[in-house]
Amino acid sequence: MANTKLTRTPSSTGNSKTWTYSMWIKLANIGTEYVLFHNFGSSNTSEVYAKIGGSSGVIEFALRYDGTYEGRLITNRLFRDPNAWYHLVFVCDTTSATATNRQRIYVNGVEETSFSTDTQISQNAGTIFNQAYEHTIGSYGAGNYFDGLMSHVHMTDGTAYTASTFGSTDSTTGEWQINTSPSVTYGTNGFFILKDGNSVTDQSGNSNNYAVAGGTLTPTEDNPSNSFATFNPLIPQTGATFANGNTFVYRSSAGNVKRVGCTIGATSGKYYAEFQLGTNQWGGICLTNGGDIERTTLGNNGYMGEYSADKSVGIRQDGVVYSSGANVSSAQWNQGSLGATDKLCLALDLDNKKLFLGKNGTWSSSSNPASNTGGITLTGDSYTFCGATDNADCKINTGNGYFGTDAISSEGSNASGIGKFEYDVPTGFTALSTKGLNE
Image (tube, rainbow, N blue to C red):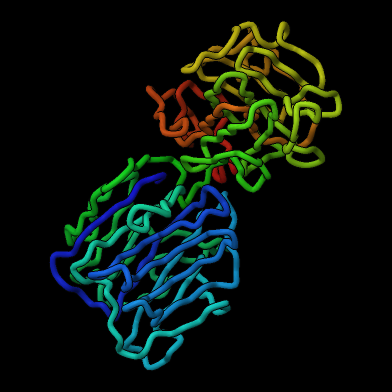
């Protein structure tokens, strides 16, 4: 949702004292403050909003009137996981006789009770919410854009619900899971959007549709039931910019190659991914344990696989391939450079400890990952997909169906049914995602 905001202005006044907001989100840039939902009154001194992130990574839920915070909660707990889908529920019920029930925050089914700021609104006080002012999702007017993923957004007008209405605990895994069709009363201005894909059409039956007032909504296979590996912004990358749900990374500093691995690694199984590389950028795999995926400079193994102590494998946009210190281009890569629209195909076979390289759906040097023919032998135990960037951008598709904001032009076959790729996924391989790990 980078630089994207959704808006709706109610045509009639709903319940300003009692309402519930439920949404699932996946964070992108860590350290950036994101606005989840927001609305101003007749002036910017009266507002209602929920935020997440910033330098500390907290959640803030605020009700402000004429410049005074009548209700405000700021969590002590921090939220900085770029791989997790968080279920957030914000409840306002100023009619409650119990002060701590008038404004509540739930995360993954558990109510937050520890706050650095805890100001509860007065009983029966009204807010500017559900009134005929513009209501925004994903932006604070024209800033603080939510550059992550968002799914299953509900707002109920007139009823305060707890998190258990919208989710439940899986009896086998103990994980909090989504309730895709909760039984709720939506009220006058209530709505249900982003249910499937990127639709802002209200699914509640109220026809309270939202509009894309800025930017572009990008559909993705990543969802609360299946989290896909993406570039990990928690790996320190001075000067790096992450965007588009962390499927894009860019560094403006030349001559200082830095790596960024993905949020999910594996020790077994077979996984497929595709890269689109800028000039002199690298795609490949790196160790996730016993190794270092944050190589800082050219002289400190910035190139993936350049040194013998480095058990990673990397291929540069110009066709240079390194594996554990050896240049293996002639043996494993015979397809030349990768142009601006070419796709690097990687098949990571951790059952047979091999990596296969391909270009635009054709496997290089007569290799075949489906039959375990050819490929580069791996000597490490646990790997993840990895990019290296230096004054250009690197894009990855681990099954989301996008390279940054560029959609795949045609979908290849994929027997596992997990994820969408430009080219055919080799038989026996799948996406590196939470579901893919359990294949």
